[in-house]
Structure formats: structure tokens, C-alpha cells
Image 1 (tube, rainbow, N blue to C red):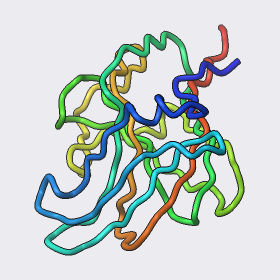
Image 2 (tube, rainbow, N blue to C red):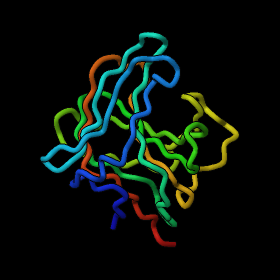
Image 3 (tube, helix red, strand yellow):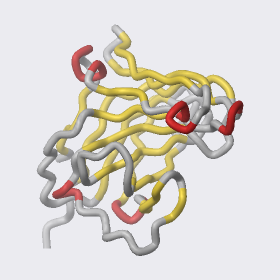
Image 4 (cartoon, rainbow, N blue to C red):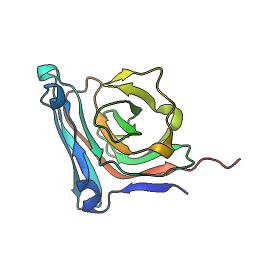
Length: 170
């Protein structure tokens, strides 16, 4: 059975996520994660290329997830036709290595997107980090959502949950 890391059916869960947009490097993109009374969160905003921008993201506050055995993560989402990234960090820092997996949920339909551990590639500020250590979910501290990859304009991703997928027993 999947272990629920975030269930966005309650407003307090979405309220603990913070935007981190391209304003950190001079851009003007905007985003937020807000609670929708229908029982899910909505990651929304607008990506702009002005002033060398091009990404929008949100991230949870650092915490100990204590995932010992997992094959990957699953996000239940309703998309808008755009591609998104699920970001994972194994430290409490603001900047550093970020493990990213790309997913594109169907537009207008709730879909469970399964992301294997191998799908999460180490990056730093969007660039590959080939010598980064392998992702260890046992050290997971932060989870985030991002839109980038030259996708300008408004976006909207509804999210019901993020879960750890259990690893098969030997």
C-alpha cells in the first residue's frame, strides 16, 4: 500500500508550501500552491521569460519523511496539458542538488503519475550533476513542484496527493 506523504484534502497542508520562482535570479514569473475547497491543492501562476526568467515552483518546508523502502513516488494530479517536475531534496538548504522527475498529467482528467527512483535526475539550477550521489529517499527532506522547460504563460496543476510507492519485498 502506498504511503501518503501529502494529502491535500486539508487547507493546512497546502499552506505549508512556499513559492520559489525565477525572481531569485531577476525573473518575474509567479506561482502559489493554494487549497481548493473541492479537496485538493492547486499549483498555479504564470511563467515569463522576461528578465531572463523561465520557471516557477513551490516547495514544502523541510521535514523528515523517513522513507526506508520505496520504488518511487506517485502524484495524483489533474493537468492542463503542460509538463511539470516533481523535485526532491535530501537537505534543508535553499540551493543545491535537486532530484527532478518530469511528468505530464492528462489535461482535465485526474491521473496517478508513477515516477520510479530512476526517473529522478540530479540537477543544480536546471543543469545535470553527473557526479551527484544516488537519490536516497531515506534522506528526503523537501518535496516541490516546478514548471520550466520553455513553457511560458499561465499554468494550473491540481494535486490530490503525493505518495511513496513501496518497494517489492525480496
